[in-house]
Amino acid sequence: MAVIEIEEVYKEYDGFVALNEITLSLDKGLTLLLGPNGAGKTTLLKCIVGLLNFEGEIRVMGYDVLREAVKAKNFLGYLPQKVSIYENMKCYEIVKFFSELRKIDLDVEEVLKLAELEDEYYSKFGELSGGMRQRFALALLLASDLPVLILDEPMSNLDPMGRRKFEGMLRDLKSDKTILVSSHSLGSLLPYADRVVVMNEGEIVFDGELDRFLSMLDEKFKAHVKTSEGWFTITAKTFEEFMSSIDGRIVKEVIFEEIPIDQLIAKISVGGE
Amino acid sequence: MFILIKKELSDSLRNKWLTSYAVMYMLIALGLSYFSLLGISGLGLKALGRITASLINLTIFLTPLASLMLGSTSIVSEREAGSLEWLLSQPVSRRSVILGKFLGLTLAISIATALGYGFAGLFLSMQLPSEDLPKYLGLILISSALAAVGVAIGIFVSITSRGRFEALATSLLLWLTWVIIYDLLVMGASIAFGLTYLTIFLLLVLNPVESSRLLMAYIIDPTLSFLGLTGMLAARDIWNLPLFLASVIFVWCLLPLIASFKLFAKKDV
Image 1 (cartoon, one colour):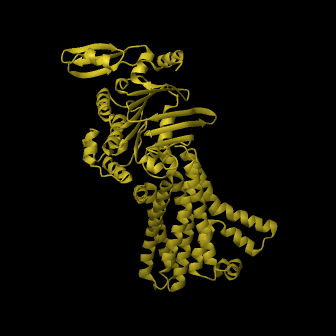
Image 2 (cartoon, each protein chain N blue to C red):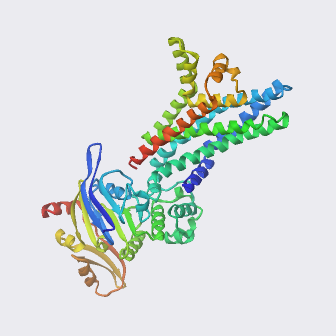
Image 3 (cartoon, rainbow over the protein chains, first blue to last red):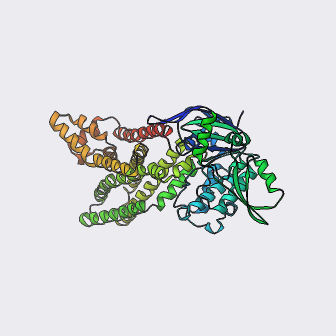
């Protein structure tokens, strides 16, 4: 039994087909869900969390997300694209409320430290910036140690420093969690993905391991790497190739260059995936 | 679910609208009690009856307004702000979210109403014989029931509305219908179709505000003599009138709640 099982999920909004008979199984590891805006990524993630009604079936840890929603949601954490909790609640109150809802014992200071928001103990959630909100919501999920994480465009509100920290966290977590991350661009998370799923117009147009994805793409990705010797650029086709180019040097920073998503979809279409 | 009730109650008690409602209620209730006493001093228990009659009129105007407005903005505001999405991604059932909002808001409005009544009651207990003061508890209880009806219908409006403005407009229209338009319609129908007193009475009590008003009136005077011939005949002819009125209020509370459960379960967030 897979951790997340999606079977023939169909969803439409006023005649517009957002998800067309999607079938997918996800196990431990980091899966990157790619696709241009309007491809149906957010709709799929919201269906997995049980926020939308749909035809078909989605099970998380064996529990149906619509009929056994509470049981399924005990295992999963969701980070929406735009994080909105309660504007008037103070950060520490939210941590306590979240702990009560999840019936877990979270240490407020630990969560705020994880989010690097130690000084915001008494700040209202509405007073936090977009990036701070993102970090706070993510810290809540990480501190809860949930086995399934559904993250919708998690990098969108983070600054470069926050992004790098977030990438590091995902890399550490992915071995024992099922993480599904959506992105509308082929950004910096690509090298850490175990699997890539590409959606376009409500359908899955590619589903496979990272190396197969990169070879299919027939394109090298470019990264700017900072070591003790300074910045240099690496182009590689696989993550192994990328690591061998680093050649044992201590990496201080990595910035991956984006590959335009439209270019990717066009290549997949030509490839007939 | 207790967590959600606690959260709703604490949010409501921080809400400036509810605080204004409580203060206004308290001031008007105190004012009514004071001026009623000035005009009727020396009448004893009858005086208390007249004061509570004034308080009833205040309750049937203010309580449905506050409860409908708070209920109607409860879900839609959270949906617009995005916090509903966050809440529903936690391990809570949609039914417990509705019940939490319903009980939390009803409790908050009941506390505000009880404060208004309480201060007036305290004032009266110092001025008048106290035999009838326990009736106050009954009035507070019926006010809470009326608040529950308003909140239940308000939540239903909130789920079905596309935005906060639509929800508020619908709740205001409902309130106007309850307190003014419905009575006029029944009055017009009785003239046009020559309805019997019992039909008029039954049509009137289909309105939960009217049922609450009559139930409160029944507590003060079970003969309903001050409502004229129709009231007296209804009190005589309808078997167990208070139970009948309480049932009407209960059904008005239950039906929108059940409809809300069903609708909200199918609603995309």
